[in-house]
Length: 234
Image 1: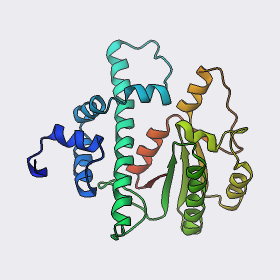
Image 2: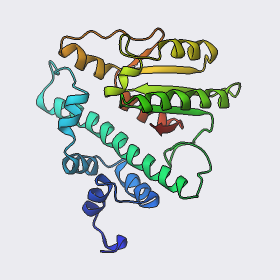
Image 3: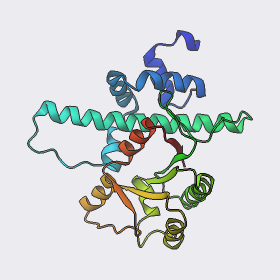
Image 4: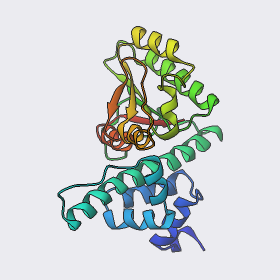
């Protein structure tokens, strides 16, 4: 079936399967961005609710009616879906770049936001040593690039990526402290929902000094994307 003949549901399936090129992904994301119904449908297609509950378990809501709980739950789900979709699109952008078509500026930005070239979010949700090292290399390169421009760089960690900032687990404490000292516009952020998941398992997590904690890494990313920050997934 030709792309022009695909139904919206087919497009969502193709996005979830990573079958779209960069332009097609942008088109579907533009449909998703402000359409809660489509976001719900993509949630169902991808069946990521189990993954969300595993990686980002939320405290049980109290003193809220069923309707309010469902509304809050879907707002969280919508944020996860958007970030998940952005990760897919970031991969498409990377493939486009490697194919010999460089992007005008590094990182992904929302089409309807006034994007900045000196504000970046480096997002890492894996504890693979190669990816953790790559995240720090990328963050340091960007911090040098935007120094003195009034910009900034966030390294946002979530799920397994929290190991980058977790004392007793990270191999990079000294380097992170040095980077914090050298680049005041570079900041490291840990996801509170991920920390909560450790607490639920009886594990208390201590973080590298000066680490900031965001209520939700995904919501933090989405909020800053809307403010024009650029997103780089590791």
